[in-house]
Image 1 (cartoon, rainbow, N blue to C red):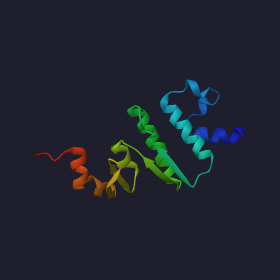
Image 2: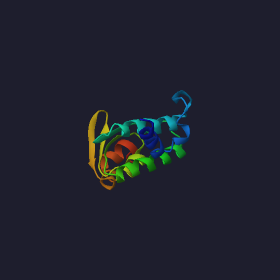
Image 3: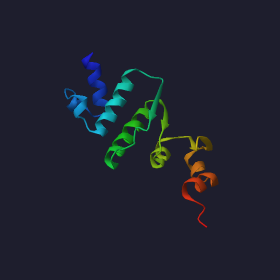
Image 4: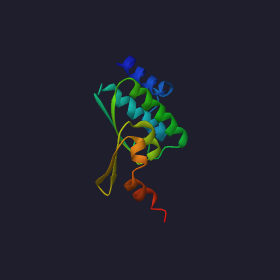
Length: 126
């Protein structure tokens, strides 16, 4: 019903755009709308696949805040993301893939200091 829909729009900060067609929304607002739609389904696990891709720094910050609020509510989130700053900030555990294979797995600190990750993403620094 409209009341429930408005509650989810309010949760992601889109209540002021409730009567706007999705076709006129910015990319950042579309991503927040997608998040509201997913939450409305009452999932046990929330899959976010490249949800931060193409967003401005401001929009990334807003989305990160929303994801943190969702995490605080106890949701399990599977995040697929190329933006390592986002992944390192939001995730308790990471699996880093390189050319389709698992390169490393662990906490953000463990992954950040993993020699294979450093070599693959930062170079050896010879």
